Image 1 (cartoon, rainbow, N blue to C red):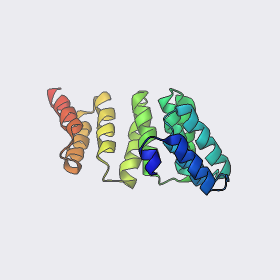
Image 2 (image 1 turned 120 degrees about the vertical axis):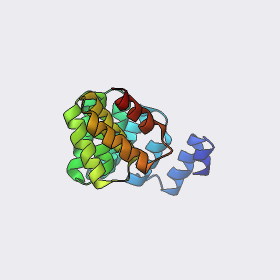
Image 3 (image 1 turned 90 degrees about the horizontal axis):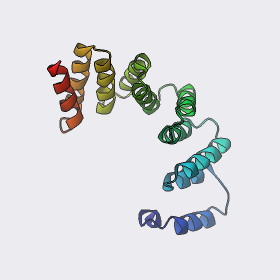
Image 4 (image 1 turned 45 degrees about the vertical axis):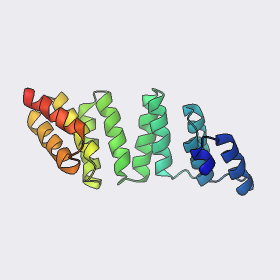
Length: 171
């Protein structure tokens, strides 16, 4: 971990491989995937981890986020859907799928997913902000304001909720 923090990834990998006796495990694959800054490499490590442990919801979620970062929204949504099938109460997967929906202007889906996210993790201000943005795009100003107000209650130091609430008031 210290070498990883010092950005000596190759040496960190070498030591980790020696410590594990060169046996791959899901922890090994996920750790190495997380260390890499290359999205293709991260996806490759996630693929390996999911072959070892095909019912690992967070692995699908992580790979889905990498795929989304590469612009492969179809596969990203498939992975987030799979994460939710495996772990139906995984708030972060609903948040991420809802955020992708928001970015793709699939507003009904975004609102539904972000509503699930706040149901399972009510303290996540960013879910209220993103759901508020979806309401704002649908011209549902009352619900948008309610979500931005809740985000401010949860994270009063956060600028985005204040900014977005001011947009609602301007309309």
